[in-house]
Length: 274
Image (cartoon, rainbow, N blue to C red; front, side, top):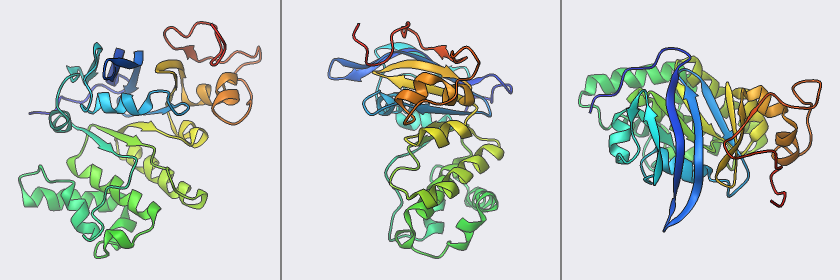
């Protein structure tokens, strides 16, 4: 399957429109709509149970939506298998560590190119990845299991780039890492974007993720509550009060953020009785 051509700069690479999905007949997502701009970094935040994991399962092909559409660079992907979606250039780095602990770092990275048919191309891609993450090259002969949690995460980032993906999805990359390690992980995310990658980030550390992003999305109860630039979402009073551990300075002087409310959000504050 041939990967679709990149969209023009500023155009959506991934477009999620009115997606409804769930498990066993029960909907978890209720009309989710947002997009990821080509070359940008979209960060999705929200409390536990807001539907973030279900959304990623739907985008990556593990779950088929009952309604709505998902397109990647103009090609519909809703209902395609995970392998088909991978072949189109969408790579997911899962929340849980996924390296083979008894294999070396280099072997783990090369496994990221398992669909590549040419050993020369595998070597070329590995060399390019090691240019982006030179510290990973220094660990090449070490067993992956000997690395710290933060180091393993960087190796996972390097491995995902072996297929030269058009979209990198990062699921809670800071999960379980100490505050001292977080900077190196987020610096690595910046490096990936600087190398030209389009990134969809789901992040529990909402402040750090939104500061990093070009676009922010707040989910609640399976719906998009707010969206806007990363700064707008970070500074919106609802985001501060509900998801960031306290109120923050609003974007403009009248106390209203410039974020667009998500479909169906209305004027009701999250948690308020309808």
